[in-house]
Length: 253
Image 1: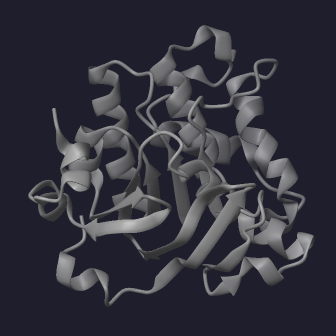
Image 2: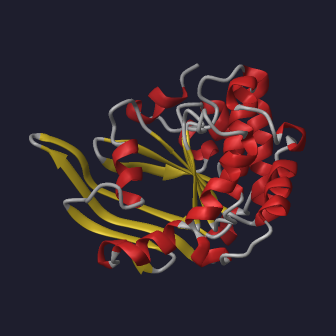
């Protein structure tokens, strides 16, 4: 974890300012703000339907915000053309909630797929075998290289999905409910793996989770998304000690 005093001295790699998004009369985001610093683990928590998924989709350019600015590595994504956006996305890893592996592909083929899509980053003639093996070794699953997703447990699928994210050597990793659907022991293993990856690659991590234990262990800072805004920002210790009823509701066991 980053020392709290040192966080604000680091470079901002991702910033949302005054983000708004509504669907008819449903105002999901009402001026949401966020800063992610280099090497930081930032957890965003919010109730179901609070706008976490909408925020992520706006952040990666899959959905257009109604108002506000989105800066990724000092580039305003709302002003990028499709080619520039694709290049930028190669520096952003995304671990989907359900792992999202291709069922008809082996583990090896699942990891090779993003390399084929991002030839501008790595070139046409890259040693995919070495990159695939190294990514799998980093998550402790080199032996699963020729297995099909149907042969993997839930925890193994999550590890393979993380390896597929790492293979693009991202500067930022977005985790969508990384421990969802996993038993407590496997969830703990995934959290430790996320910490190890953070230290090894000095990535910046944005973690969307409902898992309070995950947030406690992995976060440098937390943002509580309530009523469409960044209602509360602070460390786990600071927020869990709050007497505000809306904040306390997140930390009841």
